[in-house]
Length: 454
Image 1 (cartoon, helix red, strand yellow):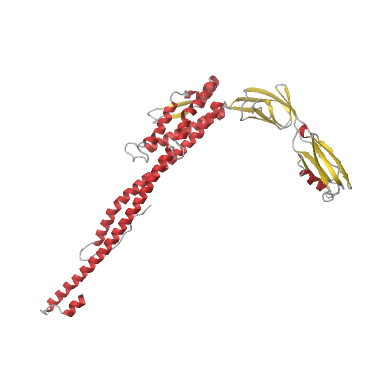
Image 2 (spheres, one colour):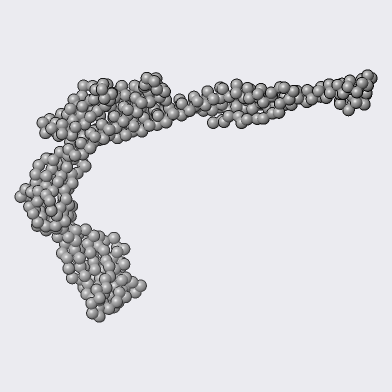
């Protein structure tokens, strides 16, 4: 943005106050510049206000998205009895049914571990040839040559074979042959059990002993037995995933409507709605005796607040524990109030009405809230663009007026300099006439004297 003109000082001469004249020129030229700068300041405030309202709309849009989800499917939550060595999580895909489930775990799933006999070092030769790991019906064969026929070489070859088995050489610190090769199945359960066979010569071939047998998790739910390859059990309770970490039971898993997340979603919606309503009103409505806000009389922006209120008409908000505060004393202007106790009562007496209310609020408000933010064509982006275009135009006008004022001042300074020179010239002539008259020469000025003045 162009700035104002700095002060310029000129000497006075012969009673003419050139500085005063220059200041008058400057003051007159600065008036339209100051007016434009004030308008730009107001318009920048409008852009800031639009940004805040746009942020409010985005927050409300996120809150409404939660309503869409809850309207389509009642959220459920699972809890387990205190001290139970398991977790229960409702699947995001749905399907969980409210109820109480008795869970007992007799054993956890575990992965097979097999260990070789001991070797004196990791570089001991195991021989050349082949070693085959069989997992289920699939064989994984590794070949050992003179370049990798050691215990460590075999471990590396197994890890590179693609078999769902991990190999590592361990130093047990036991006796003269502390090094062993440990093979571990990549996953728990009997499906990943493996066997090892070899055809090696020229070294000490490893012979493996199973130290941990592959086994499935075993549990009962409400007396029905289930087996699982993993300790993550997905098919014992519909729509619920169990995470097993120990045996025992029975433990109680309770699946019920997730009123906690619903309450949080409603509270977030009410906060976002009220914030938007407040910011729209404070930036568009002029209060008596106060400076008009930056978006005063902007009907397009003001219509956002009205649209929100109209959108909620006809919806039974009490099913969500929401009431509208139209109390003239509090001057809340249609803001919402959430009462969790009322909401929980509605859940217990009219659960279908609660789910319907979520959908109705979403359908009533989301299209308007979303469209107001549509890039380029939405209300907030288009209004912001209009103000920014106006600011750019006015900045250019300020620059032009500032340049014109500077030129006008420079012209005045130049012209006043000429005037002062001429006034000095004639003053010198007058002084010579006075001097001649005082000395009584009576002959007037000599040609030489006039020449010297000239």
